[in-house]
Image 1 (cartoon, rainbow, N blue to C red):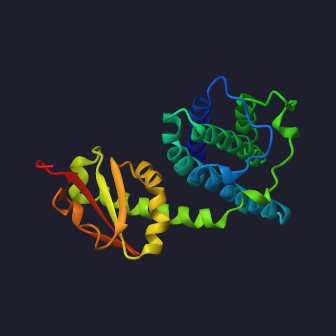
Image 2: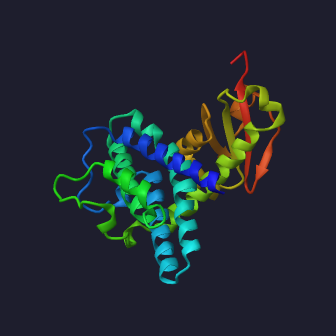
Image 3: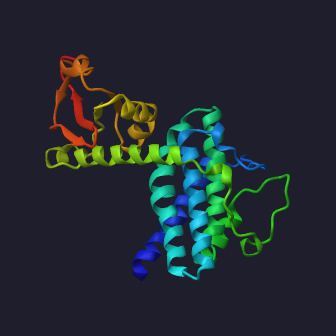
Length: 262
């Protein structure tokens, strides 16, 4: 257990260092509270789940359930911030546009708030990392994270609809990763594949299709497209199957590679 948490400290350090690289030397943090409705899907999601984590952590601390509080904060850092958000926003840094600014602002807020949230459980490493964060020029920075206010939830960050949609996105990604890990694909593990998902109904299609970029990024695919069943005839002759169909709920998945005649 000690070795495991030591390794997680290394993961935390590396995640913050990577995030700092994405912020850049000239980055200036936002002065006002972020308004998620103007931000990208991944940014809205991470702020919503961060808000829920803050609320659950504070409730656990008030009830003296220290183990629950620590596990809640750990789960957000490990499974939502590191495993999903940092990966999902990588395309935003490939272009110099508004989505890049949104990604940087959400990234900084997550780092600053997340470190304050984690500080009672890991005081030394969070102090060191917090001191390295850029600070706003329009406000005076406190001398230490120890005297900062503990995070409190912000009502306008909560978005249950976005969280539900991300649950479906992550379920899709999990299924596609399982396809990649199948026995027949082991020899091509490092190859990027093209993937399709056939939706059994228009409702699911409407939820998943706007998030094709996030799915493609998280599943490490060359391309990803979702369509209604019955509208898939266009690619049957253009793609060569290399894996059987797998169903998940109302989505059907397949990984493909370009056939020589394409």
